Amino acid sequence: MKISVVVPVRNETDNVIPLIQEIHRALNSHDAYEMLFIDDGSTDDTLLRLKEAMQQFPALRVLQHQQSCGQSRAVHSGVAAAQYDWIATLDGDGQNDPADIPNMIETLQNQHSDQLWMLAGHRHLRNDTGWRRFSSKFANAIRQAILHDQTPDSGCGLKLFRRDKFLALPYFDHIHRFLPAMIKMAGGEVISVKVNHRFRSHGQSKYGTLDRLMAGIIDLLGVLWLRKRHSLATVHEVKHG
Image 1 (cartoon, rainbow, N blue to C red):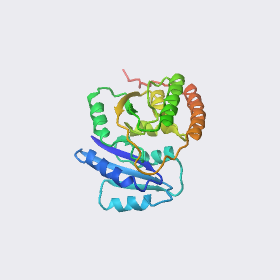
Image 2 (tube, one colour):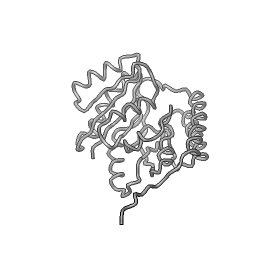
Image 3 (cartoon, rainbow, N blue to C red):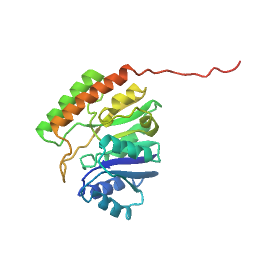
Image 4 (tube, helix red, strand yellow):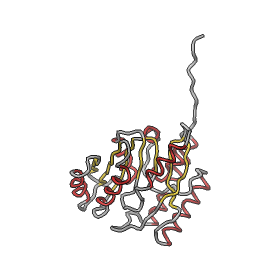
């Protein structure tokens, strides 16, 4: 199975090289793969580290946003530039484990449904502070109660999904937090897969709890608006005779 791994990064100088090495180890035995790292307007040496890594890893491609456009736009840029039909996404901070990607691929291949468009990672053992674990659990509970997307951890950066179905979704900022609900709205199936979650070794989170909560409330209202105005139509061509 050919796969494109999309990783948005911003000011992750110390994390990008170890992450590239881990992705290479996890997928080097597969038929074909590529890594797309999207530098989202970094102000440190992240882009320099990525350029250096390109000399060692032929599967690595690097895209650059001249200024920070946010995680969702970085993911969208990477998916649009990808060459393979299936996309795996990872957060750039190293907390997602690339070793989980082959397990997700195996899970996908054991399924027999053309409507399975996404596998969403579920960080069942979070290596975060108690406050971050609480706020994430609270946000997931609110989203679940309103959207009923049957996804226990929509915010996990580790996902596997069809490129064409993702690009067909209406884009909005922070869409990456609501992808399971959006995929279901478009008629696809989503299953959750338990994945590893690690401590952040270097750097610090780009999000504060309060600003993430406020953005999440606004985005949730936007998803509800989209869902109320979305309709699915099954079209069949009428044959002669």
